[in-house]
View 1: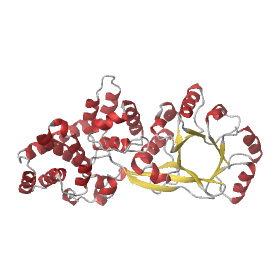
View 2: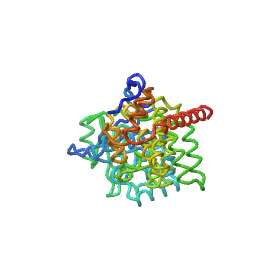
View 3: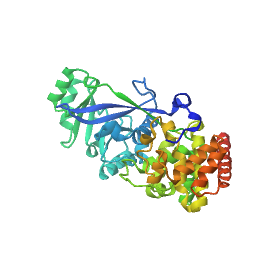
View 4: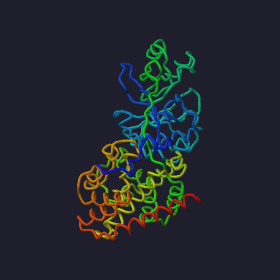
Length: 423
């Protein structure tokens, strides 16, 4: 494994704001089998409830569950119940999620009107499963019954005499979930009434999972969003904006290779990832990330260092392949600190990234040309000039390219930092 600059300690350098937390609570069948898991945003490891505003919490679950922790990790292949607010619903963010892996849970706080009804109709036509949360008979949510597959009923707030009317009002296709089941008596009562699914403390309290995400640059998100709203923006322009931020670059790559797209192929550049995602998906994801607050604060030192390495590796590779053949070396430098950024071994950190085989091998310490380029950059970082020059000469690269490339990378990173500080 290539050494991390100055043996940076994850314990002392990691920014606690980069930790993400998602709780899950099982939804069970009458026989005790797991039908799915409701995913819930948590602000910290010790948090037992969510006090974050609905839109922000929903966006964080989107981003953290799908891109940082991974739906498969959280649900083991079963469906994830994810809360949806009115804003998330009308912005069409839900289509970022894999329709075969989620149940979109419409919160009771949503004001049901023509826009909401049409959005639910379209999601149903696209094959998504919809659920109503905390349903009450005679409420405005009745208008959504033709489009939902699941209805959740709060067993603590629903009066016993209301259950018969509620069960009778359900279309046959709808599954009923008894939630907040906190005793065997409530479980037995719900079973007799005809509820098919069950959720509550009687079975299991929510379990919190922790992961690490990367800090983002506010200016990069602002610029990206502005560019996305420009109808004349080109893929090349978007690529340049995204490459300026390690967090954005990582999320774009992770997004392409996520379950939402079902794509497992190697990518050689950010540009290729953008083409595969399409501008519409990039626009949606950028909005979700901004809403989720992932761009708050300045980038940490690890991200700055990764950007310098990425630019340096790219510039050195241009001497070999020209500008059009050096893009994957940007990914090489960018990913060289992912183990420290995410608090995971490198093999795990890059497991779901669709990087080329030679770049993956280099990141895992296997000797090849990309490994030598990155090794020379790291040696130059540490002031080991002679070693850096010798490393490049062994693979046929003129050594004068290294100080030029690294100097350009430093200037590039300084300009980004200066712009970010002024934003």
